Image (cartoon, rainbow, N blue to C red):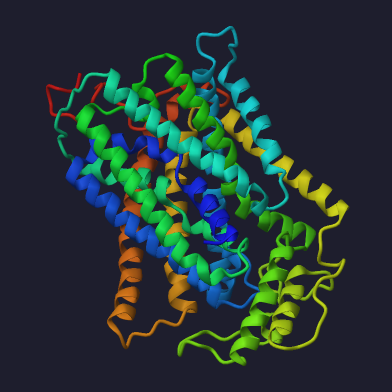
Length: 503
């Protein structure tokens, strides 16, 4: 495993494993241990396949395809690009707002409970945003890789503290779940929120000079994360049954252990925030500045490809290996308009020039027109600061209703960007040999993911819209988050238990 491999694994693990892991006890309480285990296993397999699919599709596409939206344009034209941009924004721009609300309403108050430091939820959200901003301002995603190691450790430590403390200090109260279709199907949104990784594969792949290696790394990392999710869910259900709390933090009493667990999760959220936001920031900066923020890694990628082509005399090793398209076909930029164009100062034009260089043409590809200047860095910092400020404003304004809104957006955006579009792009771009059983299974799995995700996504969207409709009278702008009921809250203390055991 190279240093780049470890950095990409850390980025993927930090962006995937975190806040969602604390809710798997509630997921098992809602669907029962058997059905929940099968659901987690199946959706994990779908997520793994979709994530590997988008990685392979990016590797098969021309080098000018730098983002997920580029891949959508390459596969399906302007429509594919728009669909991915909208769904990607729903995941990468709106989901971090949930981190701000979580930090302001739960994590920071837990960290400072019992002290003289007391603030309102709105003030905590602003403090959370101020803490996130320095990490967001790190120029490249690769620059945050070292921090992601600490983010991974913090997330793991939070789960370990919560589980071990509850096992040793809290009494067991296992009760069997009364399985209801409505409760079981709604766990799809919770599981997908914890597993939706395909949308962050392209930015992570841009950090690796040999993207072909990433597919195996993604598979192993996601398998490890799934095993932890199952372990957390099974242990929590074993202890609490249908009375499992919404998150692992909720089961801890107000003491120093809860403060420590909340502090560790706060560290993880601070680091995971910019990783999840990166796809949107990259698209914004490239559209406004007209430059590629990861041009240095791209240079190394081209040099590595040149070496490989020289070693193999330009002959593909695999019979179905995709070939690079021509320079004329690749030299486009996906900017603010819906059609490709050929500006003079363009990183993607440089990308195409690099592609030409990697095919044996002599052409200089690193020059001042495509590298970031001091002025560009200042503009990039302003763009990122404005983005975080806008997210903070939305978090403060919609804090009482944002979880319901996120549930509605997540059921569509995460399903489209992390399940459906990766498989569609993979089927369109990557050559799949159906002469062998593996190729047939690969193709069939893509169709299973598309059909299943569409059905569950539509159902969860209808349920989320119904929750918003029924709770709309309780929503008020700038109202503190802890003054309203959360999504799906009922009069019963334990709604997943049998009748007569719910209080």
